[in-house]
Length: 81
Image (cartoon, rainbow, N blue to C red; front, side, top):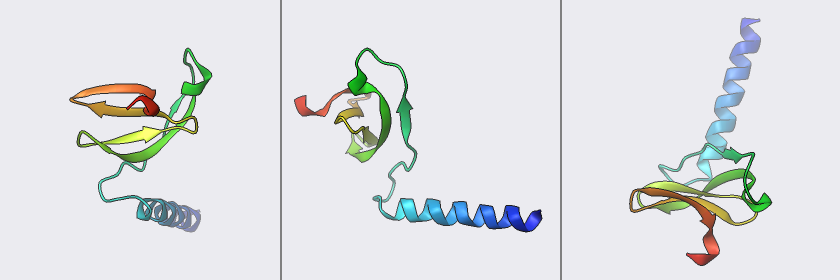
């Protein structure tokens, strides 16, 4: 069983490293999910887009963004920015 755990840990590390290799240094590799919102456009998986205000910002498939601006966090349509 130890061999399986070691192999699994190695695969997870390699996969995580491969994902991080596609992102700029300092980017957050974690995805965030919104499961309940007033509009279906705000639902789904949010992944790293770029940096905003010194922090990672995120976007979903509907171009709804999650970002920080002047110390406050916003969730909204990137098109208006």
